[in-house]
Length: 335
Image (cartoon, rainbow, N blue to C red):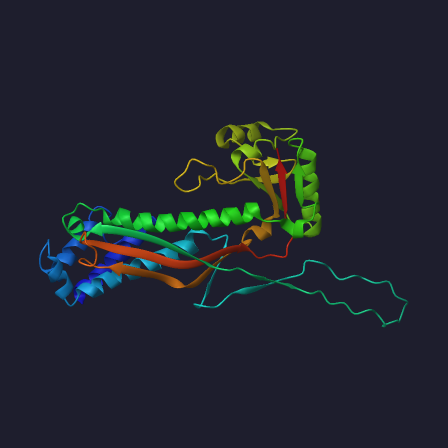
């Protein structure tokens, strides 16, 4: 069990190192140390299939691997997306969010001393974000890892990165595909005749007016934001433009660059370069909600279960991403 504790520490270091945190073991010797502990458990560098299966700690070792991969992904979700709410529900449960009604109460003119005023109650809305099942299945020859031919750190990192990349696609798709304020034309502007800066600013004014003067930002990809050229650009603003490729402000409004993404394993842009999002600054943190149902499950097939004598792992998780806010924001699209 002492060897298993060392393996736990090594796994923790692998996860910490990927996030740039200080670790007990350096990145260079992590795999060697992990391999040494595996040898300490199995007694040799190249155990046979039977030797692995008959070792009383063999199953525990693979259980630890499963635990590490699942926990690493949950940790990465919370750390990688601090601007999104991450909510965990039990298996089989659904999370219903109460959306606060953004309307204000009517202030009614009455006669002095008259308390007979119409009562008012604002109804809040309810939103349920459903989850979907996602899986990643990987396999590797066990002896290849023990002989040093498999980069364990890279393999684990690739699994986590693949899942996190998928969640990131879900988040950005949810934002860009959302329909602000129940489809109101004021907050969903489509300019078929090309980009019109005045229409963008009119939407900004609407969003700001409906959010009690809260600072409003304009979000977009680099190609979308390049249309937001300020009427008067200072030397400092022009320097920022040359350094970043976009202006950071225009007519007093803050411009926020959204990094363009490729759809995974393609050269297709995920985000529209013909779209701007207009939102209150204090809504960005929490505009998107990530729902994790249960905890990620790692299933494995040990050596001997497959005809090719490989070790197989599958990450199974049920995740949902959606917009859950009653605040008013806008989407501007042009062609």
